[in-house]
Length: 98
Image 1 (cartoon, rainbow, N blue to C red):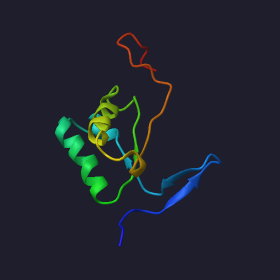
Image 2 (image 1 turned 30 degrees about the vertical axis):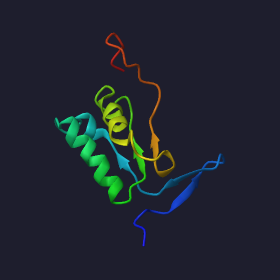
Image 3 (image 1 turned 180 degrees about the vertical axis):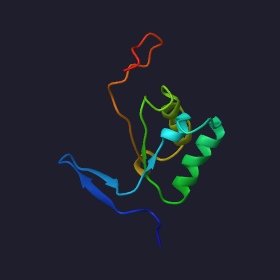
Image 4 (image 1 turned 45 degrees about the vertical axis):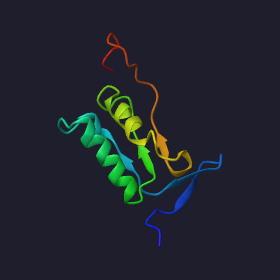
């Protein structure tokens, strides 16, 4: 028996995502500082429990959540996981805050 959530079609491009995923705002220190290892462990524990969709964004810790997500999923099989991010935020020291 698999604990992987069923996937549903999103849009009309053949993309299929699980109905449940892991949001990573807290992995970018949104609610409080955590270590890189705690962030990686969080994603790996979620994956071990069947989570196959991870959502991140440059806004989360000015790229920190994306970096930590990359470190966590680096060795996972690509066909086993969907990672999404958002666009529109400049990640430069001189970028405007909004």
